[in-house]
Image (cartoon, rainbow, N blue to C red):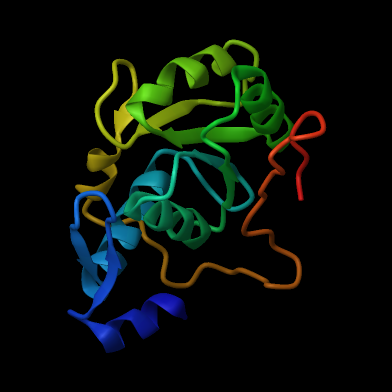
Length: 173
Protein backbone atom coordinates (compact mmCIF):
# COMPACT_ATOMS: atom_id res chain seq x y z
CA UNK A 1 0.00 0.00 0.00
CA UNK A 2 2.66 2.51 0.99
CA UNK A 3 4.83 1.90 -2.05
CA UNK A 4 1.81 2.32 -4.30
CA UNK A 5 1.26 5.77 -2.82
CA UNK A 6 4.90 6.69 -3.54
CA UNK A 7 4.13 6.66 -7.26
CA UNK A 8 1.75 9.60 -6.77
CA UNK A 9 4.69 11.75 -5.73
CA UNK A 10 7.11 10.50 -8.40
CA UNK A 11 10.03 12.86 -8.73
CA UNK A 12 9.26 14.95 -5.66
CA UNK A 13 11.94 14.83 -3.00
CA UNK A 14 11.18 12.27 -0.28
CA UNK A 15 14.49 12.28 1.64
CA UNK A 16 17.58 14.43 1.90
CA UNK A 17 20.82 13.09 3.32
CA UNK A 18 21.69 15.72 5.95
CA UNK A 19 25.42 15.14 5.50
CA UNK A 20 25.85 14.76 1.72
CA UNK A 21 22.72 16.71 0.70
CA UNK A 22 21.88 13.86 -1.72
CA UNK A 23 18.19 13.92 -2.56
CA UNK A 24 16.07 10.79 -2.88
CA UNK A 25 12.85 11.13 -4.86
CA UNK A 26 9.82 8.98 -4.14
CA UNK A 27 10.57 7.06 -7.35
CA UNK A 28 14.17 6.39 -6.30
CA UNK A 29 13.05 5.42 -2.82
CA UNK A 30 10.42 3.01 -4.16
CA UNK A 31 12.83 1.37 -6.62
CA UNK A 32 15.51 1.10 -3.92
CA UNK A 33 13.12 -0.53 -1.45
CA UNK A 34 12.03 -3.09 -4.05
CA UNK A 35 15.61 -3.88 -5.05
CA UNK A 36 16.83 -4.26 -1.47
CA UNK A 37 13.79 -6.38 -0.55
CA UNK A 38 14.46 -8.60 -3.56
CA UNK A 39 18.15 -8.96 -2.66
CA UNK A 40 17.27 -9.80 0.95
CA UNK A 41 14.76 -12.40 -0.23
CA UNK A 42 17.38 -13.96 -2.51
CA UNK A 43 19.75 -14.01 0.49
CA UNK A 44 17.24 -16.09 2.46
CA UNK A 45 15.46 -13.40 4.49
CA UNK A 46 11.80 -14.28 4.75
CA UNK A 47 8.65 -13.66 6.76
CA UNK A 48 9.36 -13.64 10.49
CA UNK A 49 13.15 -13.36 10.19
CA UNK A 50 14.86 -10.52 12.05
CA UNK A 51 17.27 -8.06 10.43
CA UNK A 52 19.06 -5.75 12.88
CA UNK A 53 19.78 -2.21 11.77
CA UNK A 54 22.88 -1.05 13.68
CA UNK A 55 23.44 2.34 12.08
CA UNK A 56 22.68 6.01 12.66
CA UNK A 57 19.92 7.76 10.73
CA UNK A 58 20.62 7.93 7.01
CA UNK A 59 18.58 7.29 3.84
CA UNK A 60 19.74 3.66 3.81
CA UNK A 61 18.19 3.25 7.28
CA UNK A 62 14.73 3.99 5.90
CA UNK A 63 15.28 1.95 2.73
CA UNK A 64 16.39 -1.04 4.83
CA UNK A 65 13.54 -0.74 7.33
CA UNK A 66 10.90 -0.64 4.59
CA UNK A 67 12.62 -3.33 2.49
CA UNK A 68 12.82 -5.68 5.46
CA UNK A 69 9.13 -5.12 6.13
CA UNK A 70 8.35 -5.66 2.43
CA UNK A 71 9.89 -9.15 2.83
CA UNK A 72 7.58 -9.81 5.76
CA UNK A 73 10.62 -9.81 8.01
CA UNK A 74 11.11 -7.88 11.25
CA UNK A 75 13.42 -4.87 11.41
CA UNK A 76 15.20 -4.39 14.71
CA UNK A 77 16.71 -0.89 14.83
CA UNK A 78 19.55 -0.74 17.34
CA UNK A 79 21.50 2.12 18.88
CA UNK A 80 24.81 2.49 17.00
CA UNK A 81 26.42 3.42 20.32
CA UNK A 82 25.75 -0.04 21.77
CA UNK A 83 28.79 -1.82 23.11
CA UNK A 84 29.63 -5.31 21.93
CA UNK A 85 27.87 -6.74 24.99
CA UNK A 86 24.72 -4.72 24.37
CA UNK A 87 24.69 -5.65 20.68
CA UNK A 88 25.28 -9.28 21.59
CA UNK A 89 22.31 -9.19 23.98
CA UNK A 90 19.91 -7.47 21.55
CA UNK A 91 20.77 -9.49 18.44
CA UNK A 92 20.83 -12.72 20.43
CA UNK A 93 17.45 -12.03 22.05
CA UNK A 94 15.94 -11.10 18.68
CA UNK A 95 17.56 -14.00 16.83
CA UNK A 96 18.86 -11.63 14.16
CA UNK A 97 19.70 -13.35 10.88
CA UNK A 98 21.49 -10.32 9.39
CA UNK A 99 22.92 -7.01 10.58
CA UNK A 100 23.09 -3.85 8.47
CA UNK A 101 25.76 -1.45 9.71
CA UNK A 102 28.53 1.00 8.84
CA UNK A 103 32.12 -0.09 8.10
CA UNK A 104 33.40 1.53 11.29
CA UNK A 105 30.98 -0.59 13.37
CA UNK A 106 31.90 -3.90 11.71
CA UNK A 107 34.44 -4.89 14.42
CA UNK A 108 31.68 -4.74 17.05
CA UNK A 109 29.35 -6.79 14.84
CA UNK A 110 32.04 -9.37 14.06
CA UNK A 111 32.74 -9.70 17.78
CA UNK A 112 29.02 -10.28 18.32
CA UNK A 113 28.94 -12.95 15.59
CA UNK A 114 31.31 -15.04 17.71
CA UNK A 115 28.51 -15.70 20.21
CA UNK A 116 25.29 -14.99 18.27
CA UNK A 117 25.14 -17.89 15.85
CA UNK A 118 21.88 -16.76 14.23
CA UNK A 119 23.71 -13.93 12.39
CA UNK A 120 24.52 -15.22 8.91
CA UNK A 121 25.22 -11.96 7.10
CA UNK A 122 26.74 -8.54 7.72
CA UNK A 123 25.72 -5.85 5.23
CA UNK A 124 27.61 -2.57 5.24
CA UNK A 125 26.63 0.86 4.04
CA UNK A 126 30.07 1.21 2.46
CA UNK A 127 32.89 -1.32 2.09
CA UNK A 128 34.33 -3.66 4.71
CA UNK A 129 36.27 -6.92 4.46
CA UNK A 130 34.10 -10.01 4.67
CA UNK A 131 30.85 -8.04 4.45
CA UNK A 132 28.31 -7.54 1.70
CA UNK A 133 28.09 -3.92 0.57
CA UNK A 134 24.65 -2.30 0.62
CA UNK A 135 25.37 -1.14 -2.94
CA UNK A 136 25.06 -4.81 -4.02
CA UNK A 137 21.52 -4.86 -2.68
CA UNK A 138 20.69 -1.63 -4.51
CA UNK A 139 22.05 -3.16 -7.74
CA UNK A 140 19.64 -6.14 -7.53
CA UNK A 141 17.22 -6.50 -10.44
CA UNK A 142 14.20 -6.57 -8.12
CA UNK A 143 12.92 -9.86 -9.55
CA UNK A 144 12.30 -11.48 -6.13
CA UNK A 145 10.21 -8.58 -4.80
CA UNK A 146 6.79 -9.90 -3.82
CA UNK A 147 3.86 -7.65 -4.67
CA UNK A 148 1.39 -9.93 -2.86
CA UNK A 149 3.02 -10.95 0.40
CA UNK A 150 0.47 -12.09 2.97
CA UNK A 151 0.98 -9.78 5.95
CA UNK A 152 -1.50 -9.39 8.80
CA UNK A 153 -1.25 -6.10 10.71
CA UNK A 154 -2.93 -7.87 13.65
CA UNK A 155 -0.49 -10.75 14.03
CA UNK A 156 2.74 -9.99 12.12
CA UNK A 157 5.52 -7.97 13.73
CA UNK A 158 7.22 -5.30 11.63
CA UNK A 159 9.65 -3.78 14.13
CA UNK A 160 11.49 -4.91 17.24
CA UNK A 161 13.21 -1.87 18.77
CA UNK A 162 15.30 -2.03 21.92
CA UNK A 163 15.69 0.51 24.73
CA UNK A 164 18.92 2.42 25.18
CA UNK A 165 19.93 0.26 28.11
CA UNK A 166 20.55 3.15 30.51
CA UNK A 167 19.62 1.07 33.59
CA UNK A 168 21.03 -2.24 32.41
CA UNK A 169 21.01 -4.26 29.22
CA UNK A 170 18.78 -3.05 26.37
CA UNK A 171 15.21 -4.33 26.51
CA UNK A 172 12.90 -5.14 23.61
CA UNK A 173 10.08 -2.60 23.59
